[in-house]
Length: 111
Image (cartoon, rainbow, N blue to C red; front, side, top):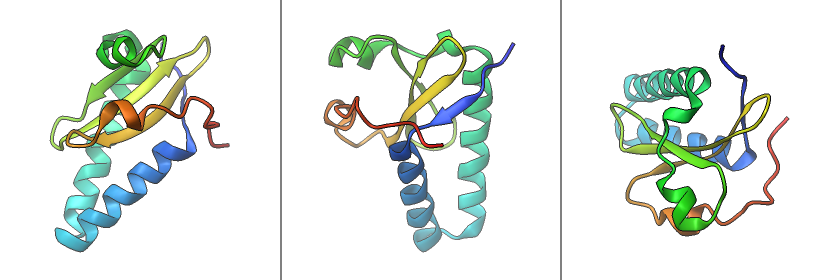
């Protein structure tokens, strides 16, 4: 049974920034491919939330934090499984400073 996915505002901003970057450097087709790759990853996370790696959750002491890599793009999706949903915190390029990027536990999920 899959759970609904609720992105935080920062995760939505991460996606917007990635799309803007790909649009300006590679074109619309790459943006579409990126979003399809993201949707495929989110579908898997929503069905099997425990499959993501807890590595950064341990490193940052964020209990329950997991990540899942996108297949075709060097991005990681960071999330926490709650009782009724998947709370997506960030969508970060692998070259970013992951630990400092996960330091905003008070950011509210978007509505």
